[in-house]
Amino acid sequence: MINSLRELRAERGWSQGDLADALGVSRQSINALETGKFDPSLPLAFRIARLFGKGIEEIFDDGLGHLKKAAE
Amino acid sequence: MPEVTFREANKRYRRAFIPVMVVYTIAVFGGSYLLKQFETPPTWLSAIVALIMAAPIGGVLWLMWRLTRETDEFTRQKQMSALAAGGMITAFISVVWGFLELYNVVPTMWTFLVGPIFFLTYGLVYCVGGRSLGAGFEK
Image 1 (cartoon, rainbow over the protein chains, first blue to last red):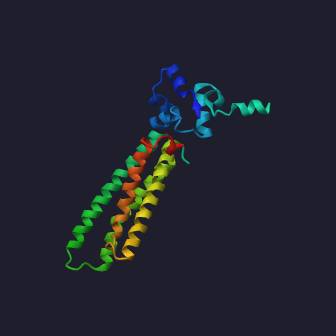
Image 2: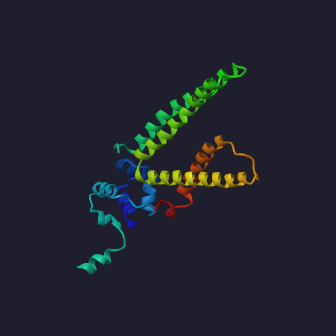
Image 3: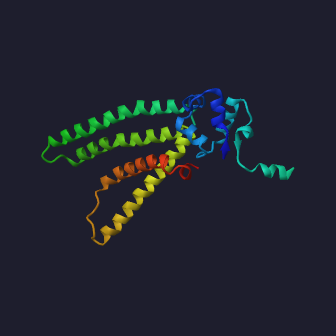
């Protein structure tokens, strides 16, 4: 899954360690999330979204947005 | 599942791991010393000493289980994959060795080795899985 975690973190001037501490996870988790090696659970995705004051879909993109448009 | 952070979970693990290993060391050296006091130690005493020596290992396994439950989801996934892979590799080695034993190709394996083989394979898979296997491992 593609995400804008790295950009959002950079905008705030946070290190991976800062973000990891804020979310209560390991720095390796943040690295794996940013590099797309690991997809977060729904509760973690909500925590991330709330921390950045954004919606989950504004941060994470599963590349299937066209399905929503097709349904509409 | 208790709500603790990755850092707190690790701290809880380390705080408990060190005393358990101290008990293990005392049990191994103390037990061996005690049994050496007898020319032929009674079986019941040997059994008690052996069980006391093994008990802290059970404690370490429980601590690993607790850490796996309390740590963050990425680490948990890595940990569970490594535990499963370690178990499967150990089982496979045991089965292969068992067949070789059946046809007298190799000597009987010392059962005591199963534990170290598991911990070694688990550790290796955990390290390799987290680094070089990358996305394929963690997805």
